[in-house]
Image (cartoon, rainbow, N blue to C red; front, side, top):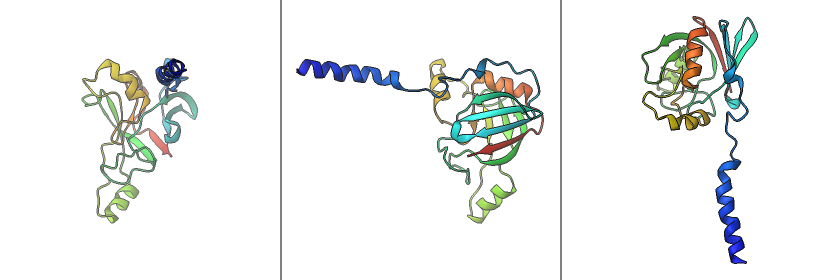
Length: 177
């Protein structure tokens, strides 16, 4: 009887990894080619989705990673949260520690005022970016499947290159809980 329990125990341990559902398991939009300007973006933090639009028509949905504390709105520098609210894409940078990036206009006046009233900094430098430079290829699945940033929105390097090319200047981005 003991060998059967041991065998079942070892089998259950071996199968634990197979039971995990990865964030991108049924995500096929990565293969959709963008060929039109992106003029608005909506982020749904709870679903880990970033939906891009052209003239109110969906262009593509991206699966995203968020700050290491994904619940709640970013309030202070170092809180590891991703902002919530209406912002705009206000910068582009190919000379980045995270492949390429698009800058967000965080903090806005409301964010800065709230933090100042608490005698703290709201932080800044919130980006949409790719993987860290000099990462190992075998780390990419983990990056895509977890919330690992310090408050930014992360996608794959291929995806940020696509966004960099097609997102228009001052594109509005609405980040929802």
